[in-house]
Length: 95
Image 1 (spheres, helix red, strand yellow):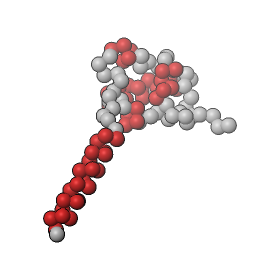
Image 2 (image 1 turned 135 degrees about the horizontal axis):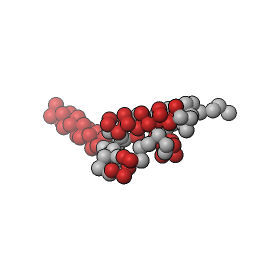
Image 3 (image 1 turned 30 degrees about the horizontal axis):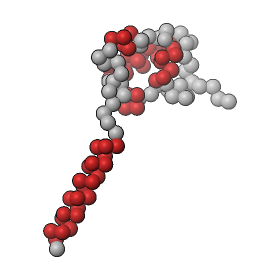
Image 4 (image 1 turned 180 degrees about the vertical axis):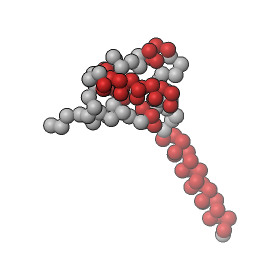
């Protein structure tokens, strides 16, 4: 009787593992491997940098944007430069 219970538990764990693995894939950094995209990270390119900001004007974290740590640091540095030059807002305006 205990053998049947052990089999049911292991089958349940196998189902959980397969479900989690298929739910999401590993995110790739969009800047790694393409030198054209890396040159697009510039504080003057405000339209491109807006894609990495929330509605409130906060910088998206790398776990959401999918950037590697090297490109996330350079991206946040350029966003801060763009904010200093008044090309991007520090915060969104409230209606």
